[in-house]
Image (cartoon, rainbow, N blue to C red):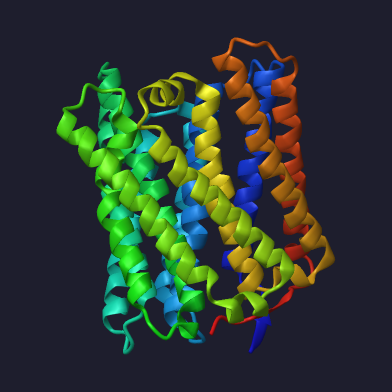
Length: 408
């Protein structure tokens, strides 16, 4: 069955473009001067909009498409996605204007309430499914972690609103939210979608379920990987070590199950295979870095140098999550069939790779106190490259609606 590119693919991709544009402004202000721009407020707006307007928006749509298959898109989700879109836009505007203030916190709370309502809808719909698929395990876990992450957001909002000066509490709230967004909601949702794409080819779901339980059980204690700068008891350190190993093994199980499905990979385009390979590689590096961060010397470097922290966050958000989403849409919405779209995807991918490479150089230069000129200008140029890639993607989608094939 063929139909026009859904607006809920086009709208989040436009939001991704807007996020990239703000990223260009942020990089320009670092490299040069832009006195009328409040760096911290713009950064808050950038990050909140990237989470809600880009990744969460499209993941919610893709999850619902997976659950409903060829059925008409339910009106209740349509309404929820529109509310989420306007809420994400509200967060972007209010954070830029006032930072953490009354209106930005109100929009943040509405965003969280939307995630709660989405969770109730999806869990109810999964319960009514005639066939229990292993992909539903990942989707339910993603929703659970998304809900859990809101505790960090509420805690941070409370601290900011009451002007509580306690750096450790603030950092723990931020890291709690980020951990269960990145490693919970985003990652498990993507794994659920990928599992849904290949499960029709599986004869035995046992390995996929084993991988799920290893990754799920180890996700909660692995939060303490973000708190290694605290004086934690040795038992907590042991728990962290075990969870990091379990996560890595679980990820290897998941990869092994996925990569053995030759029929699926042979049925998709070369650009989709390339994107999935890059996304899987970025996720694998993420799990390896988590394990490596347990070494005291590496842990000090990880938390002591901003370019390394930014590089790690971009590795996951852009390299693992965003590239996967583009790959998934390329498979199920046939984005690779249009020349301008292919060019845009290629340029975006090059930009993501170069961004990680330059951030790595910048981090190493900071560690060894080596001055390398024009690195911030190079990062600005890379931000522009990613922006150009997304401009091409959005221009192509905003023209004559591309014909896409529905998800089976």
